[in-house]
Length: 404
Image 1 (tube, rainbow, N blue to C red):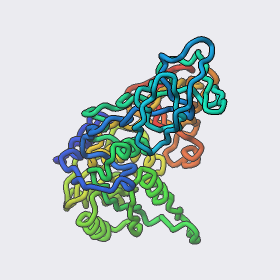
Image 2 (spheres, rainbow, N blue to C red):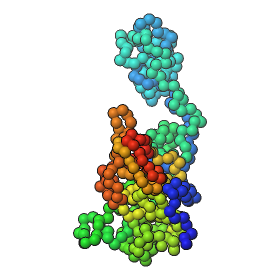
Image 3 (cartoon, rainbow, N blue to C red):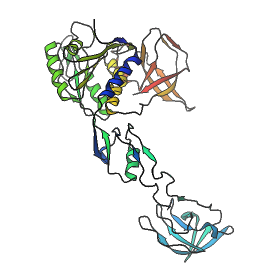
Image 4 (cartoon, rainbow, N blue to C red):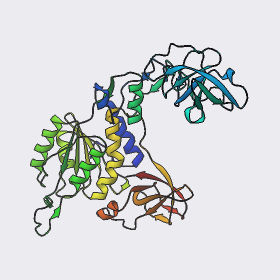
């Protein structure tokens, strides 16, 4: 008898993984703003100043009092100029205007800007079109952000635009979750380094590059350990060493129930198993546990299983460790052709996502179904999520997709 769950439904396994990750969140650290891109925010950010901080011009042109306009055209006396970066102290008198550049503070009493190209300059006078609307081309102080507005929330991903927003408020640093350190292992006597000759029965190790690429694309800096042979003692030594030094261990292969699958036994003996085997396809032998300070996520050895389990459980674990509350993006798309699933497990089908002329997203399932069919994954840009139970979708049915 095992003292941990086996054969869980996908949602039950995901809930257990998220709960476990939340119990061992990584600590936060303060980073200078340029280093915050892609990190998870660990503080709320409230605006201490308005944005824009002052009324300013949205265009190069001429600032004036709208009340002075009369008829199709109005001639105003040019009283001076106002450039960006210089405090605006001058006040316009009736019948006056001031040359102004984009971003420059509005002169006192001015409430409208006429675009430069729409005006004519005649000596010290400027002819302004009478059709200029009141308040045209003026950015009002606080129209974007008011003092006290919550502009960024704990658990959100710091995209370039969000980092830029923090910079616009004068923040030089932010409190963010520390990125997890990740050790990557691939296992199996049959694996050979690409570029080396193959002996009969051997294959090249493609999972290492797959996992390293997926992790790097998510902003992490994983460490690839030497490949593990099918030897329980060597598996034990390597994993226990990594468990003392890393936040997360991700393995590929060696998690099924075969005679050479030693990872479940090593984890059960020296660590803790949270669950083993999930009712999903591909990826059913997924293993999740902990060893010393590290979470351990054991992925099946077939490359498409690695892809599906990393994109679902791997990302959820990494996000949970960092306290990310913002969900990963998924899409809804129409099937190009019918799709049938006779089995009960949740399935992740490789597919190609595209946009139709009508603006709708369309996805076409790849005909290859084997979890060893790596080319089908390379030819795809999305996974189609097919829920539990036998499913039969007609062409045009709307399904959930995970973009790759």
